[in-house]
Amino acid sequence: MVTKLTQDPHGVRDAREKVLEVAIGRVVRAYRKQQNITVAELSQLTDLSIGMLSKIENGNTSPSLSTLQALANALSVPLTSFFREYEENREAVHTKAGSGVDVDREGTRSGHQYNLLGHIGANNSGVIVEPYLIQLTSESDTFQTFQHGGIETIYMLEGEVDYRHGSDIYKLQPGDTLFFDADAPHGPETLRVLPAKYLSIISYPQKA
Image 1 (cartoon, rainbow, N blue to C red):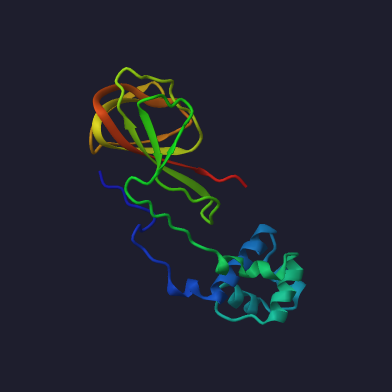
Image 2 (tube, rainbow, N blue to C red):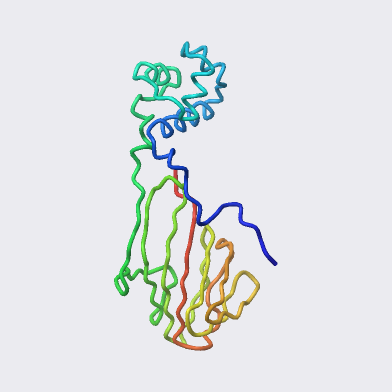
């Protein structure tokens, strides 16, 4: 079965989005909609024409400082807030082989190594993603299942494990993927071929 993606993973944003005018326009529109103000109502509050407001929100004109001040007053936001998105940094984390951070997760026992491969905190997407490289080396060491918010993806690299999700058991072999709601109890049930190694990628909404 072939599923059509709703977002092109190889797509690039129009170069116009790098322009200050487009960034300002997006922020103006976001504040207006957040406050449930129509373009016509904002026009009355600012004495700017509907056509001019439309051009500003679509990034088709460069608003003067006096125009931005009028918009800031009407929307009750600081003037500098219109430049927020333009000035945002876009982070990337490059973790060299063997240099991830070993972490202790609740339920972790000896023989189970959790290596955090990278972390980006608060960001514009509103999502936190934690990628782990997990290695299991002790056949007799079992533990209680995990349960936490978010979505988790497991990609099996080597070894074999029976992985529990809720009341279901999945036999994972190299190349297998398991994608699931992490709010259900989950974790390795039986370690069949050791050492076992897999990627675990957890994503969840960042706190406001």
